[in-house]
Image (cartoon, rainbow, N blue to C red; front, side):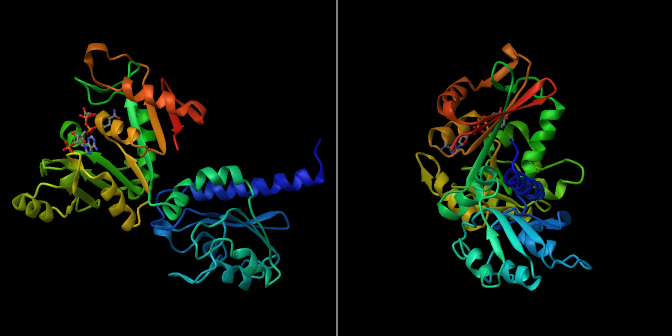
Length: 368
Ligand SMILES: NC(=O)c1ccc[n+]([C@@H]2O[C@H](COP(=O)([O-])OP(=O)(O)OC[C@H]3O[C@@H](n4cnc5c(N)ncnc54)[C@H](OP(=O)(O)O)[C@@H]3O)[C@@H](O)[C@H]2O)c1
C-alpha cells in the first residue's frame, strides 16, 4: 500500500534518477573529476539541471546554480555525488549552495575524495541546510565504481570489449566486420564513455583501426589512444599514427629504436618506455602511467591473447560481449571459447545485462 512516506521516497528517487541521467551524459569525459549530475527543485517544480562540464570543471552543482534570473532560495538540490567542500581548483560547491540559501540537499554517494569525504553534512548544517545521503544508493554504487576504484585503490577501472560470431570467433578471414552496424554504433558509444582506449600492435597490424568515436556530434568525446607496441612495429602509415596530431596517441614500448622514435615524434605520437615482465610490457607500469596522468576509465579493444592475459590476472572490471547471430565456421579465426569458458565460470553470481541490437546481442558482465 502506498503511504505518504513511500510517495516522498519515490519523489526523491525520481529526481535523483534525473540527476543520474545528467551524469551519464558526461561519463568518461570529465578528466580526473567524477561525472556528476545535479537537479534543483522548488515547490515540486524542476527549476534547473546540469552535469559536470566537459573535462571536469565547473562542477555540476555550480553550473546548475549559476542559471541567471532564478531565485534558488528554499529550493532542494539533488546531486548524484556528495557536493565537494574543499578548495581545489574551484571554490567548494557547499559554499555556492550556502550562498544561494537552499533548503536541503539530497545526494546518492559519498565523495571518495578524502578532502570532501563525509564533510558536506557538517559544513551545510552550520547554515541550517539539511543533507540526506544514500538516495538511490544501488545505482550510485554501480555508477561510481570507476571513481571509487581510482580514489581508493592503486588501480583504474578497466572494461574490455570483444565482438564474436555465434561460434565465438573474433575475426573473419575475409571480412572486416563480424557484427552489424547497430553493434558497431554501440561500440562507438562505449568508446565515448571512456577517457582512454588501449590496444596491441597485433590488432593494429591486422585491423588498422582508428579507435575513435565516429557518432555524429560525439566525435569530441573520443578517448585518448594507448598502444602496446614492445618492438615499435606499428608502421607510421597506420591510421592511429597518421591522425595522432588530432587525437592524443601514446605508444608503450621497450625496444629502443631511435630512428623510429624520432619519426613518431614528428607525427606527435608520445612514446613511453616500459620495463618487461615475463617478456611482455609490464602492465602494472602501464596502469601506473595512466593513473598518474589522471585517466581512470580504460576501454581495451584487443585480441584474444591480450584479453586472456587480462582475465587471468583479474584486471577486467566490466566485460562487453557483442554477440553476432552469424556462424563463421571455416571463415573464422582466433577462437575465444577458452576465454568465454573462463568468463562463464567467474560470472556465476554476477549481474548480466543483455541488450538486443537487431540480430546481434550485447551482454555486459560485471566481473569485479
Ligand atoms: N572481435 C574483436 O572485438 C576484436 C578486437 C580486437 C582485435 N581483434 C582481432 O584479434 C586479432 C589479434 O589477436 P591476437 O590474440 O593475435 O593479439 P592481441 O591479443 O591483440 O595482442 C597480443 C599481443 O599483446 C601483447 N602483450 C602485451 N602484454 C601481454 C601479456 N601480458 N600477455 C600476452 N600478450 C601481451 C603481446 O605482444 P608482445 O609479444 O609484443 O608483448 C601479444 O603478442 C586480430 O585478428 C584482430 O582482428 C578482434
